[in-house]
Length: 222
Image (cartoon, rainbow, N blue to C red):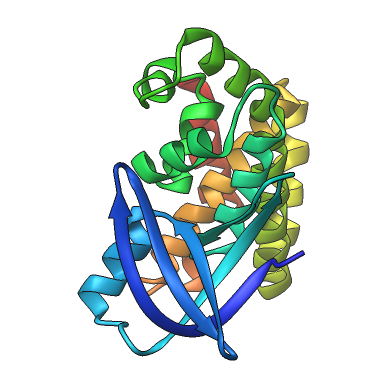
């Protein structure tokens, strides 16, 4: 199974709405169907005759071997998830990733945005509903996992704020704010602190009182 390639770009071309590149890797030429964004990067950055790196999905069939190439592991993994849905083929997956960025797709699925998904050629209403139904929980769990990792790193770097957030959590619960809303709020507070930090953040200006007030103002608007 081929899952990653690094080699010399030999050629790139388009056939109908499909995009291809030919990569020389140790004397072998690998024909790879890829995304339009990869071709765009090749053209704008003049990668021709230079090294190219792609994450691959290798699909073996009785009569063919097909390679699909992506700039990132996250794109490749999302493509693999799409293919796990019954009745969805590789070209539907490529069409989705050609029309939308990975973040846009995740947002559309999370928000149940059927209009955006069904705007892709070849995807009807029933297929749209199936895509959202099959991927929504996976996408949300992935985002929660990523969010938790970011939060953990933030608190490791800011031990004093870790204690403040724990006190805020207990205080908000004692005031009968829902636990789920409190949990969803914390990443927003952390993001506000990070943005402030990037523009001359002063640690002394962040206190239990200021963060609690901000948290309550946000929750009261829900």
